[in-house]
Length: 102
Image 1 (cartoon, rainbow, N blue to C red):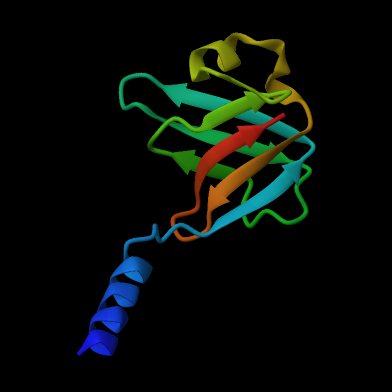
Image 2 (image 1 turned 90 degrees about the vertical axis):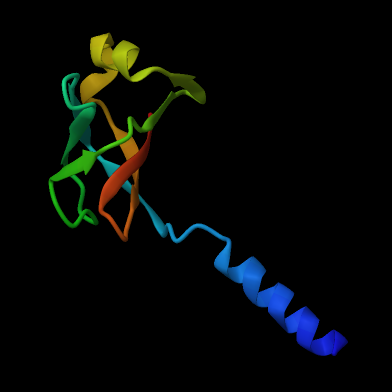
């Protein structure tokens, strides 16, 4: 009986983890558009040899980090950093952007 209980607990812990599979891709240029009305947006990537597409969507604003410091999406869109070398982290299952690092 104790072995059966251990197996059940192990299976429950495996299924409780998120089903997100992340992939990081460097891009020569990253531009973000945000649509306030729908709270969604698009990330345009250029110069990314490993990206599957040139436009990625997001339904939740991605975490944006510049030199290790997180900034809000609104501040990022206003900043001059918009078109510089960066890394996008995408959820490979949904092809949505989770984070952007510069």
